[in-house]
Picture 1 (cartoon, helix red, strand yellow):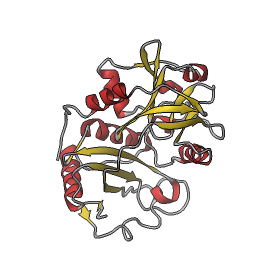
Picture 2 (tube, rainbow, N blue to C red):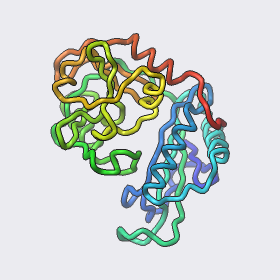
Picture 3 (spheres, rainbow, N blue to C red):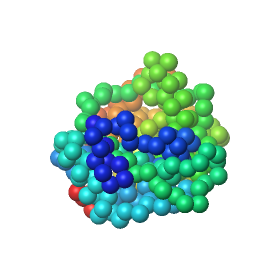
Length: 273
C-alpha cells in the first residue's frame, strides 16, 4: 500500500502518522470511504461535502479545494494501481501536545488510502445490538467521526454471536442504523429508512435514494424492524440483503438490492480525478 499523506505519495504506511496525532490519540477527526469503479471515485461531491461539514463541526480546516483533493485521489489510485475498489480519506486535527484542549495552531493531517475491491458478500445475518446504543442527541451521530467505538463494540457483539452485522437502537429504543451501513426496510410495499433525528448517519447512498424518490425517512420501531417484508444494508461500497435477524429468516429481495446499486453507481456529478 502506498498512501498519500499531506501532499506526498509515501512508500509505505509505517512512517505516515505522527505519534502525537490527535486522530490516533483521541479519535479527533473525520473520514470518508468512497467506492471506486473504472478508476473513478463515485459521488465525490457528496463525500467531500460531508467531509467538510464534519470538519467544520470539529473546527478542523480543510485547506485544499475540491479540484486539489480530486487530483490527490487520482494520484493515490494510480500509485496503488486501483481500478475497482475503495478510497478512504482520513482527516485529523494533526499533531498536538497531550491533553484534550485543542491547539491554537492546527496542522491537520490528511491521509488517503486505496484498496482493491473485495468479492461481493452474500445476504447478511444480523442481530440487534444489546451492549451499546446509538446516542441520537450526540453530534457524533451525524458526522463520520474517527471515534467509532460504539460501532466497533456492536460489530464485535455480532461477531461473537456468529452474525455479520448488528443493528443499533437509539437511547429511546428506536432503530438508528447498522454498524457501517444505512438500514433500509420494505414495509407494506414502501421503502423506509430511520431518520437522522433518531441517530441515522446522513449516508451518501441514503441521500441518493431519497433524492431519487425511492426511499422515505421515517421513525422505525424495533417492532417494525422485526416485521419488515425485507431489509437491506446500504453503504457506498454496495448493498446487502438481510437474510436473518436474531436468527429468524427475513425474505431477501436481490432485485431491489441491485436496483439500489445501479442508481448509486449511475451518473455522478462534481469533480473527478
